[in-house]
Length: 119
Image 1 (cartoon, rainbow, N blue to C red):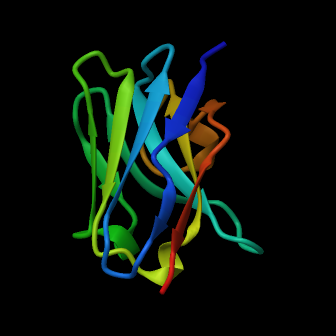
Image 2: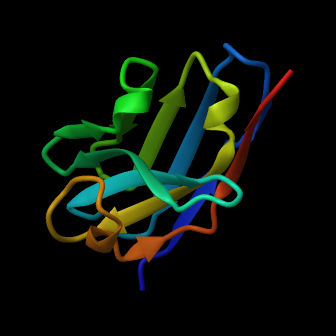
């Protein structure tokens, strides 16, 4: 069973930055970040394939970046210009099939790390 552990969440002022880190016990073909705000469904934020292709949801494009180490076991989500609507529980996930932002393509999930953006 693949273990997934996120870290780096916290509270920040609007316009600020946070870096989320994810460690996995086995690299997947695709590694991604999802988020879920209270009362909302979980949604894809960004993902990166083993070959380095990157996928972003439109509302974070230009503000968030995603990267991984060469081993594929450490995933980083750099979040800049944060907005209150970015507040959510952020999940890291690993997938072993196609890469994108569909939840069903990811089979290993972390417990989530909370991000709160507010004045």
